[in-house]
Image (cartoon, rainbow, N blue to C red):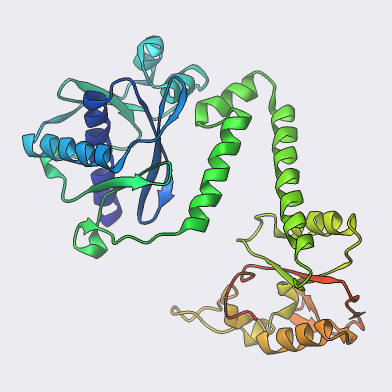
Length: 345
């Protein structure tokens, strides 16, 4: 129930914000792109590209949003009939909605009206603008942060929590999407229908390779780096990235040694339990941190080390006589879920 209310509050503030922008800056297009800093990050564009508004502009927008909230305008669902929407897709001003209607046989798009403004959503907002409990909007980087209330904060907006590295990663992802021409769902479907998926994959791989090359160059420039860690959830491509990074470093004459954190599991019978009494294989305490750090210290000191091997079939760590020694200019690459956990090393 909490998630439903939070979603409705988000959709309500979003349609009010879009109406406010339509009133103040009808020539602009709005992109709400991703979650960030306990809110939603978005950008504003005109026919020439990105538009960076000032803090003074966002204060004006905030005042307009509050004005619409105070008017307690009804929010009415016009239709959720996808076939009717398809019939008039050319008249819809949003590029993403037009592309989805044109390139998708099925979609859960609903049309809503607030006053004289109409827009399109997947989820239902509240029935009127006056039901908004709290909101905030302010300038952030080259765009804005739109914040909506959360139950855990007594239906107030969450406090500011700046995460610049996450913001940078999202920004790069958004830029990549625009380069590939797939910055909304309908554009991906269009690539499928035009049989351009193979080219899309190659373009994505090229962008990925350029990124790895930049990372490798940063590592090469700093001869004090002896350890590189790679983190990410299961099946996110950590091992693939590790292999590609090793190849890039090797082309510059840097020998690497790859270590998987999976090989440092304490063993199935020793894995700690979570709050439900079930084995928690994803906690950092399921890893033998002591042994890992002993191995790392010895390797960096130039010693030969026997590295462990975890047998997922037996659920036990085994010794295979696998001995490694780090070369003088070598770099250790570690990959695993907890690669960036401060408790790891």
